[in-house]
Amino acid sequence: MDAGRIDWTPGQLSAGKSLDGKQRKPHWETSEQVHPRVTAGFDFMYSSGLRAGFANTQTMPGWLQLNLSMGRRFDLPDLGTLHARLALVNALDRVIELRNGTGLGVGLAPQYAQRRGVYLTLRKNF
Image 1 (cartoon, rainbow, N blue to C red):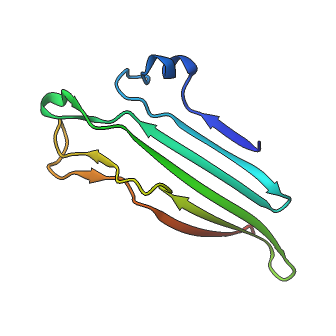
Image 2: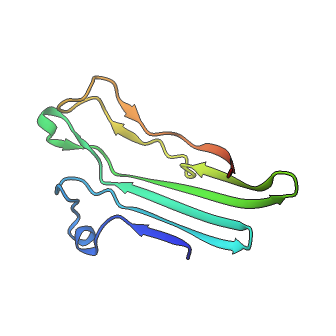
C-alpha cells in the first residue's frame, strides 16, 4: 500500500474511548496503485455520537461515512503532467445528524453532515 493511517490505538478502540473518554472517532484511509498511472482509494470515519440533551446527559446516535476516490496521471506533450482525481463523498448516502440542537453551547438548529457528493479535481504542478 502507498499510504495508510489509523488515528486510534488498539487499546482505545477496545476500551471504546477516545482521548477525552467521551466519544470515539476512528478514521482509516488507504490508497493503492492499481496501474502505473492510476490509484484507487477509500477512507471511512465512525463516530459514537456527540453529546446532546439537557446538561449533555444524552448522546446522539453513532454514524459511519465511507468515501471513495480514483486518481489518474496524464502525461500531456504540451502541458506536462496533469493529475485528475474523482472523489465520491458519503458513498452510502446516509443522513448523518451531527447535533440535534440540544446540549450545552449548541444553537437551536440541528446540524447535518454532507450528503453524497461527487468532486473532480485537476492538479497541475508548476
